[in-house]
Length: 266
Length: 245
Image (tube, rainbow over all chains, first blue to last red; front, side):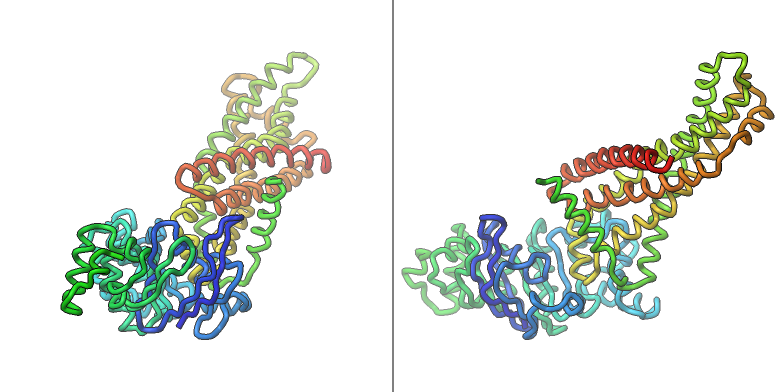
């Protein structure tokens, strides 16, 4: 479990995150949603230690990540897998090498054992016959799957995904979402996903934190989100007429009626 | 103000490189890769430049030595000392600042912009130690070797041009090479090449590692890295000459 307590982050005079707290539970997909510039990427970078928050606590299973010694921090980081928005694959290494890299760096396994693990995770993300391809030869969806395979190759306890669906078509996005969800349950890991993809919110959002201008505006599950009366959240989630209709349909399915205030998106 | 901040950040980067490697074998692999990139990758240009510099030195020295009182073997002495003291270490290192320096800056800049450095950090790898240290050590090993090679090729190029243009015979050139030879000059050139090697690897690494933005900024960082490296090489060339000669 990862607990975020009263996190604050500023860049110069500009407040990026203001007093945000949340509890990300193990074995579920925890989503941080919000418009571009709402602070969700900075929040995630604070959580993994790429940025140092100005105030607050980040607890990994009760251990404060911010104040702990560098050596302990490094140990925690070895238990973190991260899927970056741009995949962040190493250009000079092929798929197999990219995935094997963490194993080469942190294990003393035999070559055979490492390759077995590489092939296992490649099969897990439904990528076969791509071992020798270089990142430049892969499609966006394949890159994401390779990056996901690399993120899980060391059996992490925590998986962070920064906008995993950006730049992908809806069908590929769905495949990536399903993979993230399946891997979370299968490996019983704490998964945190940054997204503004509404399909992801409805598909995999076990726990959702909505951020607006650096503040936590709302939290709940994907079941609760359609009943939310938070105006900012409704404006963000159901921005289009199509999504408003979809929401009404979902409410109809869930409750058998569409309350007047909800149908107006208030 | 930015100047002092950059110096502070550069020193912190150097300090940050010193930590226990997460896996010695992976660091060794990266070091060997950098040796090949910096050493073998620059071999062609160093060879071409050195031979031509030696050749041009011979022809221009002969052109200026018009007195019949000066023996032709003096041309070989002047070419030898010029190549050893200045051309091989300084000119070759300025070219290497362009060749190897821009490659280092753009490689690290691209890694930074495409979040590859962040990915390594999250894995728990000290990226300064893993990405920058092997480059600096490889430069410290390979660049002095390239400078020694440049000395030999420069002197050989001078001999080739001297005999081809009928300025002096090969035997007179060889005789001149042995006259008044000071081994200290070679040591001085090697000291310079070590200092320049550190500049060539660490300055572009700094500009590449801390780049912010996109591909345009990578290009700018690469250009800035080469310009600053060249200025630092020329400045330290002056300081070392003033102190050690």
